[in-house]
Amino acid sequence: MKTIYSTFNPADAQLVWSQLDAAGFGAEVSNETSALSLEGYALAVGGIDVRVPDDRVEEALAFLKAEPGIEGA
Image 1 (cartoon, rainbow, N blue to C red):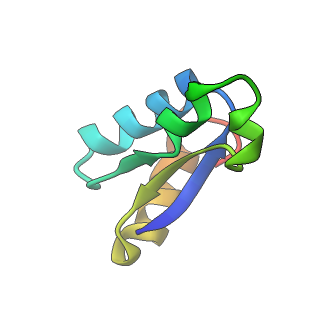
Image 2 (image 1 turned 45 degrees about the vertical axis):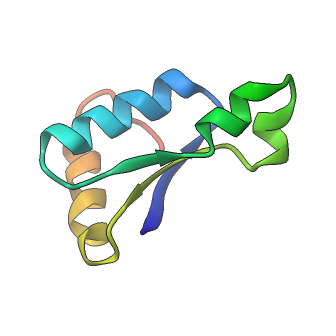
Image 3 (image 1 turned 30 degrees about the vertical axis):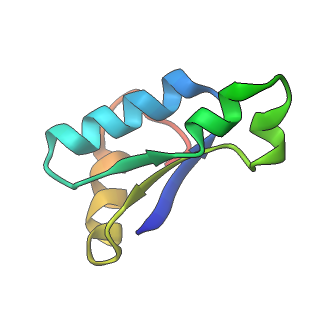
């Protein structure tokens, strides 16, 4: 799995994940629980990551760039 999107905002991570999941990319969110456990942990763990399988990275990035409202992908 490779990270294709990282944010400090859990709502942003869930939005990106939901778009990828609905499109069948097999995405997952990592570090969300750690980031939300204590104040400041989002910075400590490097943010909340949205990851996809290695063989779907390029396709997923192209998909996100084509989606309106998703910035930073």
